[in-house]
Length: 366
Ligand SMILES: *Cc1c(COP(=O)(O)O)cnc(C)c1O
View 1 (cartoon, protein in one colour):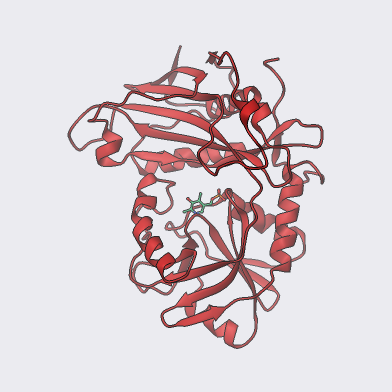
View 2 (spheres, protein in one colour):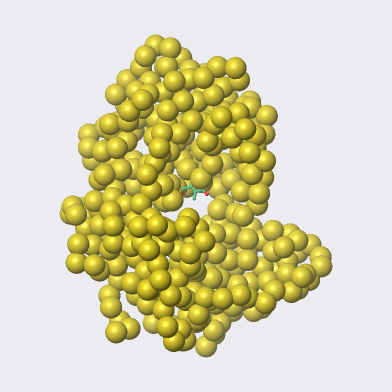
């Protein structure tokens, strides 16, 4: 079956072929002790792009993929990804959180990196079928989830600089235990930069992470957990944190950096904005300087700060290192904690999904 590049909004049923393993590995997994990022479920979803069409969507046993040494992603970096989570409700039904947003963002990233769109309906269908098949892999304990990693990369064997004509789109799944987020310390980086307007900061591109590894190691060596990225020109406007967007509470009101083309359009970020407003807080998206945060800390109006992202949910910020100084943010984050609890309650069906974010995964394969 062949799928044309362009894709309308109507949901079509795709012919996804499924090859299952003879015996699931899930029986050997201790959900209370899951090694982070190294445990994978039994199956993966794969689709190939050849000269303008996505073809052969399939679910097959998780395993190695033969790769030519000249695969273009390895040399020129056309590689993008998504990160999302499947959770279970009180009755054990798998649910997805705002999957359509991830499907759309993958294509925004694809545009910037000169890669083809992946049909959003096939994204959601492949994801749903995979989660349905792997439903026993979703850890039931509070705060746990099945982490889903959709990604696309250029697998054409070619030495030369142009957009590839062959790609793979894959979704793999990895169970993740409850995340006990300890309070974190950030390093405001004034030398290295992550992104500049016009660059690739808004794309969830593998290369953005490659460039962040060394600065993050240096920040860790100084006793911090993650880098707080500042703008590329004046090194004072706050952008985001490692794998998270950032929020500050000053004098009762929330502020978060506006999307200026250099920050990632986080789905947790957009959801937290809605939750905060729903709880009656004012949230403003605008430019924020590190000096303003330093001032607010001195005036004792800086009340909380937290990072937001799929992997951790909400990460509470304790301190921010700026040059020789350390800005002490707070020892507690009551509003951040409340927002995190609300987000988790929505994801596990414990409160009404009044925003319409959850999608139940029907049992189709049984
Ligand atoms: C994925 C990511 C985020 C968080 O996005 P979510 O959709 O909330 O998971 C923030 N910043 C960067 C750089 C990211 O890659």
